[in-house]
Image (cartoon, rainbow, N blue to C red; front, side, top):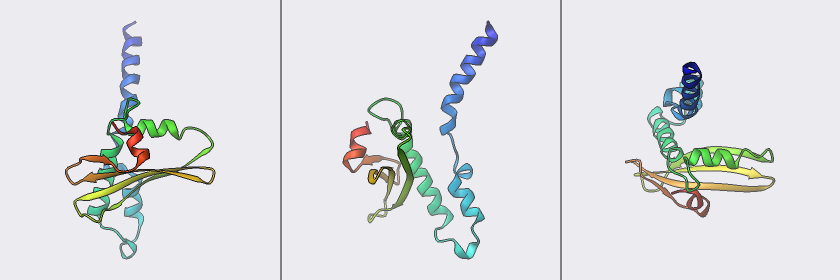
Length: 134
């Protein structure tokens, strides 16, 4: 009986460990390392800032419960939806990065957009993001 309880607890805890991806484990870092130096357009420091900003958004709370990442994964789990993925870019104000998540349903694109400050504060800046951000 104790083995069953410990297995259930371990499986429950493993559900929450998937989001603990570090920058060095990310696809963007690995593809950066594979790109020859003369073709790199962005610095490693900028890539790390972009990754961290996306992590701040993903870990923010969702109005439906859980994190924004889990809410968006639920929304895009429908087979008819093509996921555009996460994107981030520098804001006109250098203290902010803008983070976007997009997906397509047919020809219609839906974009969720947040501003992330250098201190890690997340602010929804469009209607889609406002509808899910707590």
